[in-house]
Image: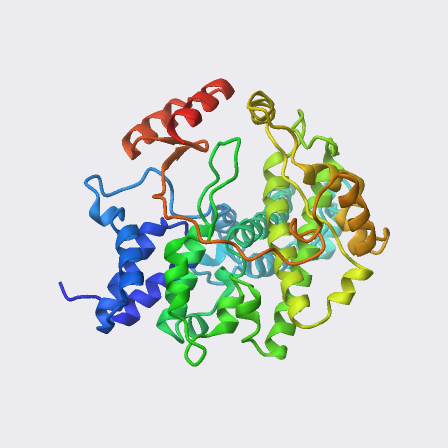
Length: 455
């Protein structure tokens, strides 16, 4: 079998930006890319990559992981389209991926609706259906009432399915952005312009995509010694700093990006903040949270809230960093939306208390500030001075805590291999993980005991 070419490996690395590949496996791909190029690595980079790639699935005896490598995809409308094709005569020829494309699904619904005299959005079964005289006038006299109703119901269900699909696709994008910033949106041409740039982006994104671990301490940091070694290889002449700014918006990186590209990023993050704010508001309106503790209560949609909160904080951090680099941070004097904490499970909160901890100070700051979506709409004022006052009241440093300034530059942490997880709990190996997942184990007490043993 011929060795993969640099282009093939770059394509695989680019594809990993929308997957949840283990950082170890990405490190192995980076090794293969440099080998295919004939690049001689410096000792620090070679040692760091070797340390990570040692735990690649290609080097382990079991050769697989129990964790999926994809972000969950919403179920498309393939079944509904197949049913519509059997009931309507004017259906266009559709490819297999049409069920995942909202625009093509909507076009089918509109075209099929014309066949039975129905306009898009007419979903009231009592008011919007045609009676016998109206069907005859519309040239539908040859279709029985039963057959007409069957077609009407199908199109009504397809519109509901389309709305769910759009929502779930948007939610998947929110999850990916919260974990890996804008890596998933990078076009291949930009990503692959420089091999060192591609290596750094692919690895730092894989680190960002790691799953959270059940713990009463901090989650592991994204920027580790391998990322640091790959970053050190970037040169001002060759690196594509604009691409790197999509995932790693430090002052060092942003200083290399043109004002035009920075403005493009700022606009993109501003739009994304509004999109995520809508998700947060929707979750809040369905069941308002306990702001002063942020502990989950029955009825809270913790999954949606936590995914949106992580995406909000990621987007907000990038927005702050780009705004500061553009020299426009005076905007924060008038408009400084706060961070959004995630909901905490009651057993984790109890674990914090039992280990001598308590609520994070940021929770108290969040509880006193206006809600983010109200700030974005201009319904509430949240200037930097207000944030500083609330932070001072709760003894939180607004700069170090990234309440009024970009996140501080992270120190590189030591590389640690990716554990097998079951509901956030680290277990010994993928075989055990698969068995425990199938058995549906882990109560709150079992989670704490397992986490204390393995972490």
